[in-house]
Length: 346
Ligand SMILES: [Zn+2]
Image 1: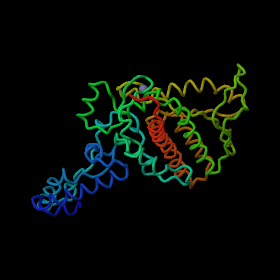
Image 2: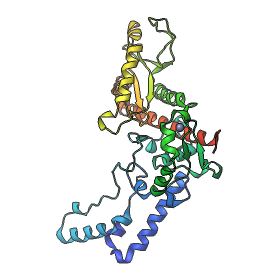
Image 3: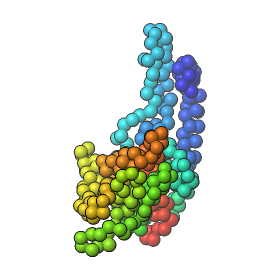
Image 4: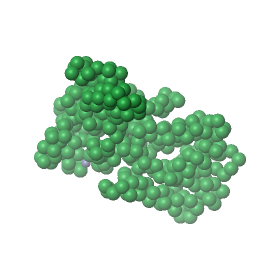
């Protein structure tokens, strides 16, 4: 298509490019299970943070003109045209903003892979859409337990503004931030991440113990970290997995502050008890956006030293992508379970 756009003058080729682009969007809509093409916002589909598809139609004139002028003047570099937007403005929901690995990652085992339904949902959520198969006309507007009216319709930006004026908010951003909708599920998210980490470590030959009760706490509490990694030839490492909502702030410096605070809390809780046993404690604190606190990288790096040198890059990649997949899986699950277990309707 790029070759076609570069060599065919726009007055002859626009309908062809239009048709190609339409088919491309149609294929994408089938992947995410949304049949109404108008509800899919172009700004999201042709953006790196959303559908990551190339926008040939908008750039057709530029592609052709750049090619013609670069042939006349020479120099291939000036022929390049940016076809995918990178802006973040459309993606105000912090969910998924740091979390991109899962959509391109094939988990080594079936157990860690997203199901087809989960993949559809997670990819749709990234484009601020709800797939048709989990919506029904009976629950287009429902009331959350926090008393907010939410809609499951896929809205255009104008419709969204109109709805908000009536006091009805779109489901996705509310689902992601409201604890009342997620109360059954919030521990599942941590468990998904916990199991994903343990699973990858096991695959690379690192033995793990889940929920160990070997440590003694000063107040005799039943508290325990999540995993011990039995690392060969050095101190065993204990970790506790925490997934928190990001700080409610638009300030860029606030990114990661919630996770960092939780990590410090966890060190205060487990550090001494674990050290007493001769083990090392590294907290694994994440934000729901996929943002990882420095402890996560420290843990992955320390564990990677225990795997054969040649496997280290793939170990690090598997760890990060498995965590990202676990978060995407949770997002999809919470959407599906919310829409299939609606208790209160208006
Ligand atoms: Zn709510």
